[in-house]
Length: 262
Length: 262
Image (cartoon, rainbow over all chains, first blue to last red; front, side, top):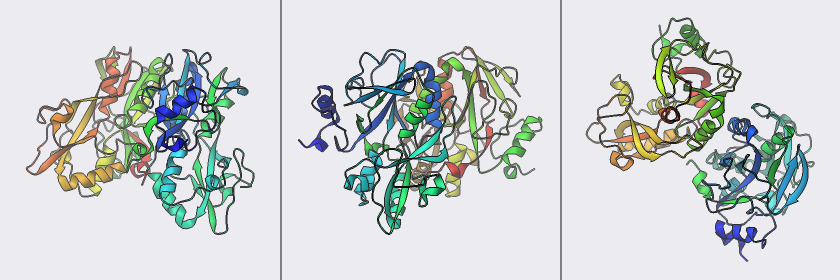
C-alpha cells in the first residue's frame, strides 16, 4: 500500500477501523498532521493563552470546543476520538494508559487542541533539497530541553523543547528562508550552531527521540518543538489529559502549503 | 512638540498626566500601537479563541490576565488603565460613557486584550513609497462591513470589517509583498478590486471612518480590520466592555519591525 498517496479521509478510515495502528509519518503526503492535547475546560483559557504567547512552539491548528468532538476547521468529517492510531492518557500528570480510541474518556467538559507538527516544514525542506538526517537514519528526530524559558500564562510555564536537524551552513541559510514561510507551523529556527548557548550539553543525549549523526562541516539547527506544550501541561498535573502517542498524529484535510504566508 | 520622536514611555506619560488627550496617530513613530478590548473573565476563552481563529482581523499583541493591570509582554511599565487618551465604556453592548481613565471600572475579573492596528503596516507601506490616501486627506481610514463571515467561536460571530486604501495596480502588488511580512499584524490584503465581491455596495459610504478619493487608474485594496473583534464582542452584549476610543490607541514598547517575519 502506498500510504503517501492516501487522502486524509482514507488514512483516517484505515486508522478508525483498526487497519493502521502504527505512526502516521509519510501518510497522506502534503496534508497537515497535528499533535493532540485534550484538557479539562477550566484550564482551556490559560492553555490557549500559553499557546498564543509561545506560537513558535505551540502553533494552534484547530480547537475542539467543549461539548463538541468535531475538528470543524481542519477535518469536519473526522472523529477525533477514534481517528488517531494511539492515544495516551495522563492523570495528575502521570502516564497511566495507552489506547486506540478515547470515546468514553473525552467528555463534554474537555477542550481539544490540535497543534502543528514539524512534518509540515520538513516536507518543505526536502522539497528544497535539504536532507533530513533522522529520516535518512530512520529514527525519531532528536529533541532537547533548553534553557529558553517559555512565556508564562497562568499556571502554564516551563522550558522550550527544541528539535534538531544537522545541515551545512549553506543549507541552514536556505532552511531559514524556507521555514520562515510557515510562521504558523513553528516558523524559522530558534537557534543555529553552538548547542551550549541554549543549555544543551550533549547533542548525543537528546531528552526525547533519538540521537543522529552530525557530519563534519555540518552545524545543528534548532526549531521550537510541539512537545513543549505537552511537557508544560503535565507540570500543572491536570486531573485528566488525553494526547496522541508520539509519532501517531491526527491527519487533517488542510494542505501544508495553505499554511505558507508567501 | 515633535510627537513622532517621543519614546513610548514619554508618550504614555503625556497621556497619563492629561497633557495629551487627542488621537495617538503619529506618536512614538516605529512602535506598535494597539486597540484595547477588556471583557469579563467568563468570556475570555471564547474571545481569545475567536481572535485565534480570525487572526487577520484580530491580531493579539498582548493579553492582560484577570487580576493584573500590566501589559507585561508589550509595555511592562505602562498603566493600561490610565495610559490611553480616551476610553469607551459599553454596557450590554451599548456605549454609555467616554472617560480619560478606567481605574475603578477595570476590576480583577476583567481580562484585557491588546489587538494590533493598521498603523504598523501603513508605516511599512509608506517606507516603500506607497502613499496612504486617508493620511494625505487627513481623515480616518474608510471601513466597511463585508459579506465575509468570521469563523465563529462560542458566542462570538459576525462579519469581517475591512479597511480600504486605494492605489495603482503596481502599488497593490508591492503592498501584498510588504504586508505579507507582517502576518501577525493583519498581514496581506483580504481582497483587491471589485468591492461588490465582498458585499460592499458603495465605496463612498463607509460603515465607519471617512470616504476617501479613489483616483482614475486606482483600485481599492482591502485589509482585515481590528474593528472586527469589537463589533463582534458587542453582539454578545457583555455586562461591561472597556475599549479605547477610535484613534486613541495604546502605545507599546514593541517595535513595528519586530513583527515582520522576514
